[in-house]
Length: 469
Image 1: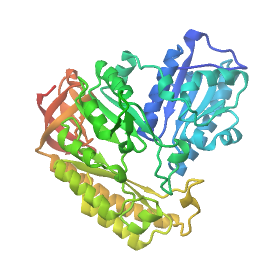
Image 2: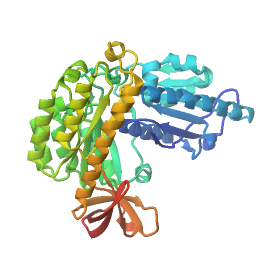
Image 3: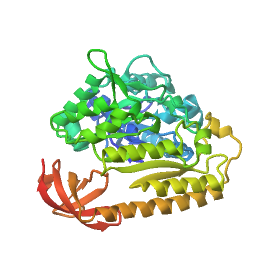
Image 4: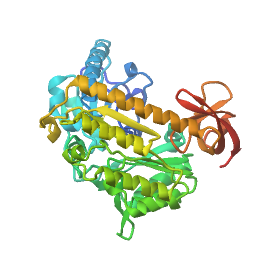
């Protein structure tokens, strides 16, 4: 879970705050795209004149930006709403109004059901409609219980305000930029096509202009985001279709941008030109998150994943041939309906074959409305837990082996913030590892050559050799 705090509004029966006193608190759950959406909601609020609330108790408007990927994530939202209902009642008794908004993918998936389960909610707004947040909040003052969970024809990005330089600087020297939304793959376990809609890509110029504004305010690294980012197919100014490889090249050419990443990918869309970009674009980080989900061809077919294990291994080999220093990360689901011991052993074999630098593993969680939720052969909780534990042991061993192999190496680290003690700074390696080093705060925002001299439990210790830029 990630959190961000932002700026907004007040409410009906209690006394509304004066305009200069309006504050908002935004709490964002789940993926990187939700972090980006929360930042854009912050920009919307700032344009409306709202100020940051550093604590939820001080907020006139509270926004939960939700994730619907796993069952527990959804239930966590309802638990949170119960606490916020009590806070809302306390503030009302004190004469202070509160508007409570549920945004994001849970809002899209469940709509008015959220109001039924928690009547204290004033606004439910899906991820394609949050640009309407001020309008919806005003409507809720007169008639609480507003639901905006459709897929509007208008392009929300065209209606979002431009982030101010000050807001960009407060968010740090690394930034997310959503370039593609939605998915057309319809994996049998996944709700994304239903909560984010069909694949849609932003125009190249809109993305590059946003990156240029970020760079002018001090951002040095951008991560291009999409539910299926390597399906990006945006239009250039002359109407030509441009794939992700072309967008990466354009992003890397923006003055001030030192490193480019992208997430999250689908194996079916690892095109030849995208693999070539890993070879040719120096600013493209040598780290690829490429979810495979299972090492069993039988389960991949059941999941409606169109690749097979041999296809995945071929992609890994081709990318490594193009960029020998690349490292891979992936996602795995254990306990998918019908998974046998042999299927699970095939997943372990795939993990051993690839040797990942990191990976994320999850127990299968049924999402209502998806084909897998009704599939026969549901796996019991104990078996899921046992298999997940085994897989996580193997993943952790590979992570530690990868980290050990970095000791003595030199690579560029983008320093992002002060470390835990005075005279220390922390940054990220090309492989997403946290790196601590002794150095002044003036290194923040600098891409420096660092020699890795030791390991911590969850990070690397480095020595700054020379600031690169």
